[in-house]
Length: 259
Image (tube, rainbow, N blue to C red; front, side, top):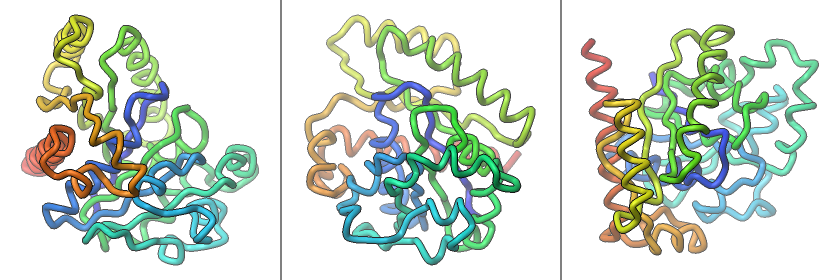
């Protein structure tokens, strides 16, 4: 049975999609079977894996609407062991389209039951807002990973997200757990970066992954080539950082299984 993990932050521009794509690729690189779900209407996760939206009809939209199955909409990526359930422009209207659907908060969770045994991990890239799409993702998930940019308003954004997570735990998914926070776009030369890291680690302790993801040109370039950083420049500092984060994810889940 797959572990289902959402990557979420209500604040945009924190490296959420980059983190989801690169951790998915890193898990696949260590021989884990991975499905990445793009729930953001911008479709950046698919673009970062080399898919041109106009060239395929597959989309998570039909899955949410109940007009198609997950299996019918999965794409095989160039990364061995990794599949993609892509977004489409129709997702932009999904919030309204889902208003009158039965079990609207559980649409994704119900749909994933048919493929959960096919994967070790199902990762969900959420849109940067707490709407019906993100609620579906968090209701379907066992865990959440929070990418966090080292900037002034970082903690304020996290506190808002934690309130939202608590509400979802209360209403729809009491078993949802925060697996960890990933510090992204880390620049050791900046005093603000170090100060934010200190505050975050002081506030959240071992909920913050030990590995930080540095600002790295190769990570920024990789999506324009349709590749995760690991497959664009394996030796780059960003690619190696995401590989270490993926290892931390696996180890953290193993510890939880033992408990």
